[in-house]
Length: 325
Image (cartoon, rainbow, N blue to C red):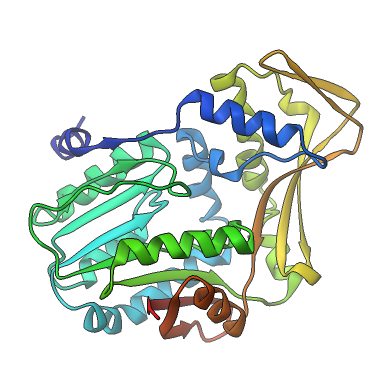
């Protein structure tokens, strides 16, 4: 363990969901018709490693386009935010984009990543602590879709900036997304801002390819959800009995990702038996794609307004700086 990682672990606020929460969510989802499992449980240590590998696949345009856009947009963001910010990031992951943001802002005083994978959180916070020793690291291991009490920096920030890159907002339904944005509005306060990444509507073939990479990394990432459940709640999913399937549904402007049963089978979870027919599809993730106007309407429903909007030159991806309306 590096000294920075040890410091991050010492400062950690650990609100990791207990196994009972994961079990309850799995039982609830498997009892629905059609069956579904929550995508937030993709991100154990192995899931986080696989997602990092996804971002390096040639079909997965999102990360490359967003990073280039962020680089171009950073001077304007720094001007809009000013000095002494407290950066709060939801679903921080490996922290690669965070590095660029902290480097581009003017003397931020603190960084609070909220991440469900403890191992990923400590590793990324440790790396950032080494790179930015003047920024107080206040990691929180938690499910950001639920209310999360945030630590208070030792130095008073001038403004709070909520950072939510990577189009993760698109993984939620309209009502869920409004709820997350409304929670951000509370965190940022009257004078704060939020910087949000959104994947934009475009050629469906391009979108589908990003979620069905030829190397099968996304398929392995999706199936890892079942491996995690087997390990943490004692289910007996046979990973060979399911296959990954992601399709763009044009009328709902979203990718829908499923695990499809390859045969007739039963799965045991905590004494409950769930039957799967051959070809039965279990929903595991949405990935909504937005229009400029559609996202502005979504933000308005949460009491937020678009202060600045930037898209890449091909209008594949966008960054939105939001303020309280």
